[in-house]
Length: 194
Image 1: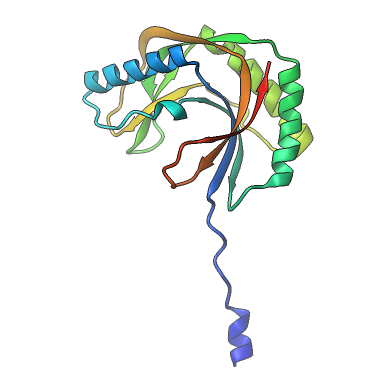
Image 2: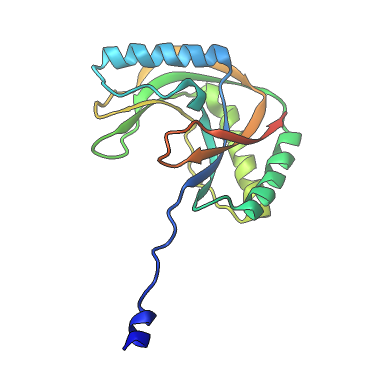
């Protein structure tokens, strides 16, 4: 009987503690503008959510996934893709001119900064990175992509509205490590300057 019972004894799968993703990050001038805009919109819409910490402001590009530890082989192969794309990219300007809530569920929805013509360069960069990641690492990225910077999370919904453009020049690609549910800042694992 004890032998039979042991067949069904198993440990739960390890908890995912590490999220890895490629991103671009705003410069200090843009960070200041995003923080001020988040505070203004929070007041304007009666939101109570806390703005995203300045050190966590970013535009997500391709997500490698969530893991119960660091997947070194994936980091290595994905880094090859990043280097290939960065080596063939020149610095480019981005401009975000629309604020809105993304409807992702009934509560705790992201208030984001997005744009129109000013984010075309990010769309092209995303496609290049997604293609390279698929070739080097087998990582599939969604075909549909909307570049955005999350400013805060709240239950209040804000319809799309024009805002003063927040601009910066993208000069590098970064691989970020998010420590899931640990309340820690992101760790920049690698940088690839253009």
